[in-house]
Image 1 (tube, one colour):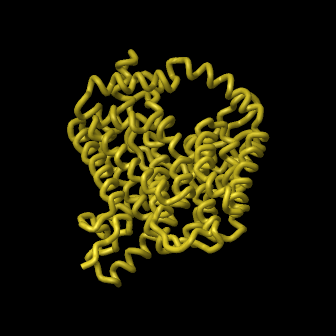
Image 2 (cartoon, one colour):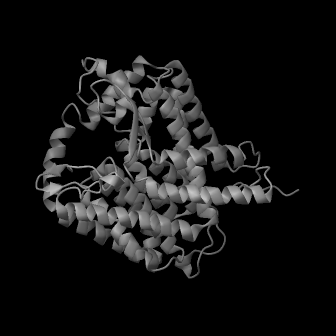
Image 3 (cartoon, helix red, strand yellow):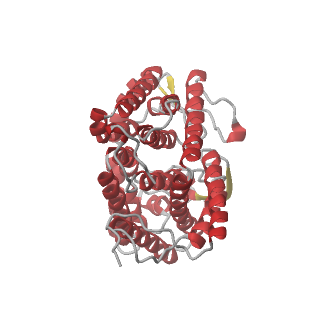
Length: 438
């Protein structure tokens, strides 16, 4: 019997009949498309909250995206072959990493039982299920997935532009838009229908670099128009991590830019759109430069937040303070009494947050998962590497994992990176022919 190559994809053997698998695939497609529509909508049902606290770090709530995400969890449990022995090195590394992260989170939640910790475990399971579902739909319906993601990105790009021109929210409260928007100097910082402008920027980055990968593999040139609109929030949201993510992604694409006209054109459209967004909000960028330097040196700067996380980790070295309980555990260390309305910011680094909340095992798990994604993406080529790198600053210098609406973005990013990084047959489009992917 011939042995499967180390980097060949594992076959889909789930034990289900073909008819049952086809039904689940159609349901997965429906749920993922629904997730793309409702994921960016800030429609929330608050179940419980801490007295005197009104931020997302002190309450338990349901968002619209939880409904399709929970459906994907059920399908993942039914249809995923969790115990396959025929896995590539990257697949084994990813499963070990995700499994260790989930186990550490569950054990920490058991040691610190609360509604918040239970919600955090569920949200991590949702990240995993969303990644699996997005990856599968990308494989089965790549064209439909590209159109749906592009439309979602275009909608948020247009909305953010209108918010900047209007200097405030547009009143689309039934879609979850909230106001008034944050003003930085004379400029407004748009956030679309997300809870935070940085979530919008990360969402836009992932879609932009996914579209660039599709364009490089023979996608319709009309996607360039969508790419240009999707990229506007990167320059409009006044976020340094968004610009850093775009720069890292483009650096990874540099090899493809040198040899492929499609990637050169896509990169040019991305840069022009980001530059246009920055020019429209130029006064805000000038103000942000001065304001950020002052904040970074203060008690709420990223360095100070990092020291707080390390202090909590050292005081809770085995199972952490409990998933979802970081801000609650940190408040007494800052001298805040119960019910004090002062917002306690989480550390702006996802691995450090996982370390503080779940202990060293959780940190090892998330790092293994990121290494698996990075290894596969880098080995695949510049487009997969760019897609991986563009979101990395948000994981290392921001906090999407602590914000509920960051959950579907993280899951979808992982699924898309894994899909774009799939071993492919045939020469690359930049050498003259379209490369078959997935």
